[in-house]
Length: 198
Image (cartoon, rainbow, N blue to C red):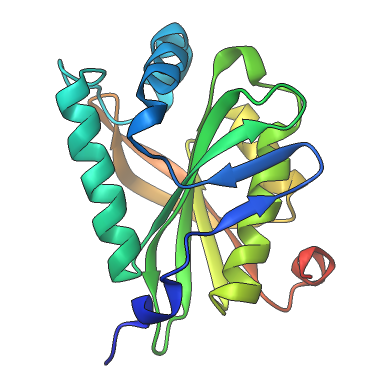
């Protein structure tokens, strides 16, 4: 099967009323590290265990190289989320594990800085990525998983129109321990998805 990365040579920038999304670059390091560092205790319970060099510039270079490789291969697109009113970085959202053929699916993961949580910015970002996934990438299904205790993430997914499909037992290793996750999904022809499409 041929790679659809040939159709994604242009770097996407997704623009909404309150947020805009773009692929990260090396100049984002200082803003990214500051937001992640100040939000560490807020983020750690919901993420894979942070490496000792998590916020080092060398780890940042490796992260950027991975983002670029996955984007070129057409398997993922990692976006940084910027608030339109301030121009500040507020978080990140990735459409990863993109597959075509009989699946035509992708998986969404996201994080937001603590001071920006609860303002609806992630819901806005999620809707932009959903529109991009369905309209531009022509995916049929988008999935997301979250720990059942993560009430904020559950609200984000449900506000964005995702439907809970089940419980994945011992699904991901988060902060050093295996956790069950709710599986959420949105299908291209779901009524909620149709209203988001351009």
